[in-house]
Image 1 (spheres, rainbow, N blue to C red):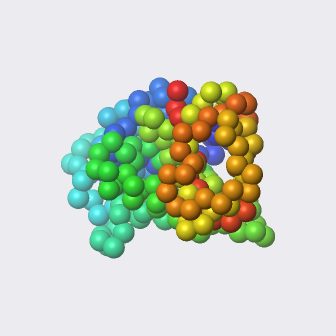
Image 2: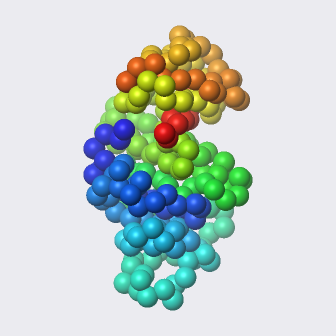
Length: 220
């Protein structure tokens, strides 16, 4: 489902991790393993050794011998979450393709905040003149792969796959192709107006005229 999966950094938050076989089925050879604070423990628990740990370091066990030689960046500011600090650091170092895991499964406020942060950082990298500089930030948990869509997205999937479209702006206008309930220049306000659709083809397309959405693709 991801284009050029070997270009992706695998970023662990401090939520519920997926199994290593499941993650390897998506990105067999991550470019880097980057962890937001206690995400390091989650990475280790499923067999990944971090290359980099970022955060205020209040959740990671720094005495763990498995990370004794890992690069650690302390970012003590309390104005941003550890995920946001890690995402910003990753993007600033030129790693534009990021698969975020273990971002959910714990506190719902953390989960919603992580989804919002992924969308905002994707939106900030949009550049009409240099699309190659745009970030590709994808989230995955045990139920969904989640894609920020600010411009256009063509995605390979399977007929019958559950699709939900969650508007992230006060007004979003979009069109779709390959869904059971197609949208053609449809205006969607914030809220649950695009929930519980379904793919009818092996390829779907979302075209954004204004605004932006998070596209939830059911992981079956």
